[in-house]
Image (cartoon, rainbow, N blue to C red):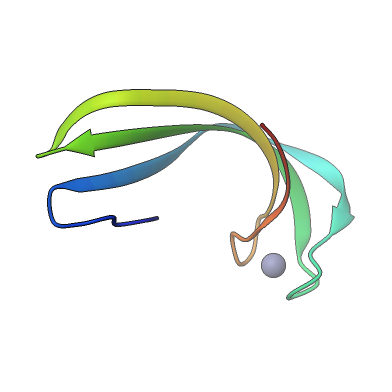
Length: 68
Ligand SMILES: [Zn+2]
């Protein structure tokens, strides 16, 4: 989650998640393929969003690989 200033912020949502091969390099937890949706908001009004796919850790939530 990134905050550029007080008015603009970003929210990240996981829309779908499936188990995937691989382990997390940070904690050793299991990896999963997630369809993510990132929304950028200005004064809490979404004005830009995109969907992308990433391999994330199911335990600590870190992004291991992203396919943008
Ligand atoms: Zn992890």
